[in-house]
Image 1 (tube, rainbow, N blue to C red):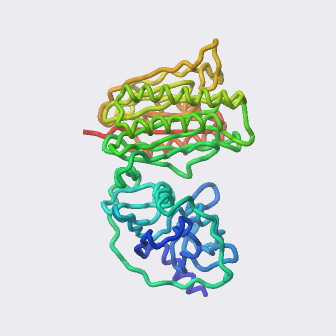
Image 2 (cartoon, rainbow, N blue to C red):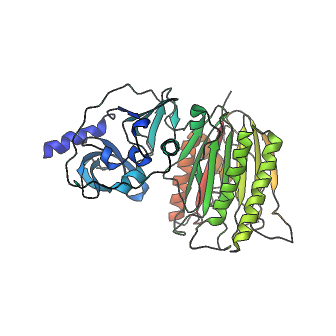
Image 3 (cartoon, rainbow, N blue to C red):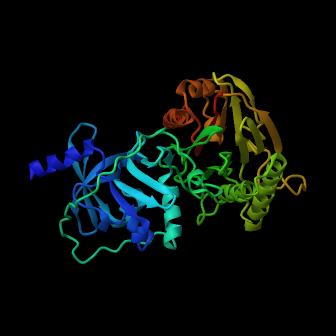
Length: 444
């Protein structure tokens, strides 16, 4: 038995054994990563305590799911069980699959240093596994179904023979290439809202810029996340971003945590999606941003719960950035070396929010907004954030230094997330929900 365990554990140090998966052979989206598709020796993504992720290897089947072997920090082996539902929830795709579509193949290659799935197109471009799963679910007709285990719950899984095609070399392990630039559709949704958090760092790359997003509930604060973030790109590689922070104490709905920020984020996405489809110019972007504020403002007021959200949205098109801001979230612009160039003017003071979407001020029909138009230089940075970032007592100069020293948007987002979370735990930073979104303009 010990030898069997050691033999299985050796799989953790090797690449998956790849097998071609033809989507036409599947009957439902749940088949993409259902327990029935896992066999002894298969690699699998496993959640750990504290939000960490590890690579595991399947050792058998339990009554409710799979038994997994993983290696902990000390090097020792540990057994863990995953229910069938948890397998689908944590593994949007199955490691080792080569997903064959008419447009090309996608390789589910492993995990990166953050524990995110590494999925590569044939040319080595990295794509978002959740976005690819959503696309496959649509092709299969509907969303993923809940897996029901067969009657032979305790049967040991048998290894199966697999093909061994050669996987592509990744161009950039850290950044997603918009799936739409491969599949030729309009926009990709990276929308994290409605009391949701990012597991790690969500990132995109395009010919114009790289961008990364992280949002979480923070430390020593509420047990839910009222921030929201949006990050997506269109077929031409233009990047659309947004950060939204539901103001604490300004109305609350126990049945819909973060409703106001979620409405604001969805309003931005809907308006910007229309701009992307119509190949809109800068004037169209400004009109759409103002329209998104109006849509969100009216929808939040219609709920009648006194909720308010900040709103900062932008499009980055080549070296041109158009930004709209309402409230005390915002964006800071830095040089490639991390030197402060300019920033949006916060519409708030301390904990007092002076403007917000859903807020009625002096009989005005809409909240006051400011629009900024910036010509960006090569390598410049845009750091978007909620007040979890900007009230962390790091200071804008320190944030710029951290960003520049990190070298890329994903590493910078991760470093700021870790530092601010640590400071919140020790009360050096004000406890709050935390959203960080960093864009770096590509060099010459």
